[in-house]
Length: 205
Image 1 (spheres, rainbow, N blue to C red):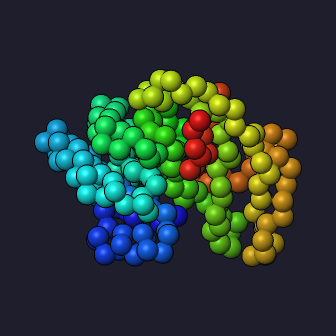
Image 2 (cartoon, rainbow, N blue to C red):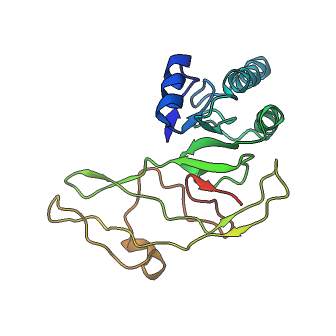
């Protein structure tokens, strides 16, 4: 899938995606910023114009009513979600979050997206570290008919190597390791609560 970040792409690009059969996630202009009410009105206008322009394209499979990596805003994103669904109820909606929003409960869309930038260091370098998967999908405030769906529990992760730059060796599940032995990611938002978020890009049912 091609994620068109972070603005609608040129029609010529989407023409090529249609021709080649590439699946597209399209989102409006925006990145880590929400302005005043006048600014938000323009954001809603951009979402509407994006869907009106491209809703007849076969390549589009996901709309993003949530602006990239922005803070939770219940009023704004409930409104943009409704704009998209009113114009095109045939496709899923999404939005990319990051940082502490891994655990957000304020999410109005169908597909949860998370940009995982977490890393750990071992004194020799910095390495990627995936956050553990969440266990459940809470009901969306914009879609109260969606219930909680069971998700897989934590999966094995890698621990940093202190002797070389070689790939870390696998370890037992996070549930069997103490917090003191786990690598600490740079953007780790803290211990997961009992109510957690779905994994990145997980379809809700």
